[in-house]
Image (cartoon, rainbow, N blue to C red; front, side):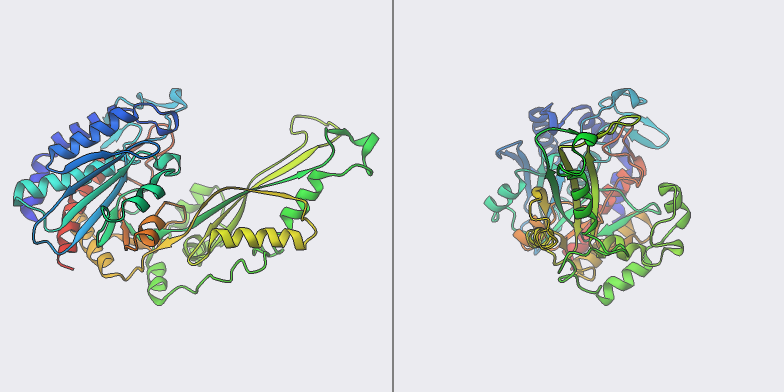
Length: 448
Ligand SMILES: [Zn+2]
């Protein structure tokens, strides 16, 4: 890889400048700002490095699709990323404006620097480096860069289903999310999500609790009882069958979990308290990554201002999010929660679904995973931390379940990238080593 790594070093400053141009172009999907311009810019940046690129329309913002065929290559890699960004608000909290990239302390600060333009652009520069030094890629490469990741990838399921042939590949390689605090990271999927809203309705208006207390329905009390019934006093989810499909970690998973460095001090600093798993980190990553969780994200009822106000609220509501692991199914879990409420005498409670994404995993000992880990080690000069999957949720099931491909995720942004927040940044080191990682991965995959 020496010739390729030398090319990357020699062109480093130009690459950083070009990334700056991409970051200067707003692409706020939630507000529809700059999306067409950014899609066109991404298509052009792809074409400039020798990728056959075009914009494929969806019901929302287009997918920037590209291909570099490599005659005679055995393997095809599908690279996923997204060119849209989160809104930059609150603007006054930025040290430099979000769409005027600024380099300081070895980082480039801008909205999208980490999530996901810096990571996405690294793949393009890797293709450039390999093509300019070797004349061809060791594998066929396809690119699927969507413009709606930050708005829940609304049209990606339809795009993927409609373009199965176009997206045919041996694996998906993607860079999103932050690295581990200790450095490079490889992960293999994510927990799924089920988001529900519960509501209990009482009288048609808020009531005086002295004039009606004891005779009018009390939605807040019923909601509290219903919500509390979802857990045992030990904190386990009490919904019948909730854990039915949760498998014990495989031996490979257990090995990997044991090897994840646990830094108690940084977890404590981050939380401002000890995690519920206690000191020493035992079970921390198993609970976070391989076990499901049910959470109350919001509880709302009645008077919330200062001082006393004696009312019986007319409505009470709760937002619940469940993080699901393999092979839990969001539809089935929702049914189980509904059945649990009904059995507990809470059949009148309104349950509304606000979102659902199935969990997704590729086995951690998949041969392509090992190949990618070797590539990342070459790029960084040290082995990556391997985790089975993210605790959070990404649309990975589209690749593993709809396309039936293994998928391997290698983030290039630092753990403190501040994505979705003011002063988002990525490290120049992560960007450059990301370019090296993608380039090395293409060769390791070709040899697998
Ligand atoms: Zn994001």
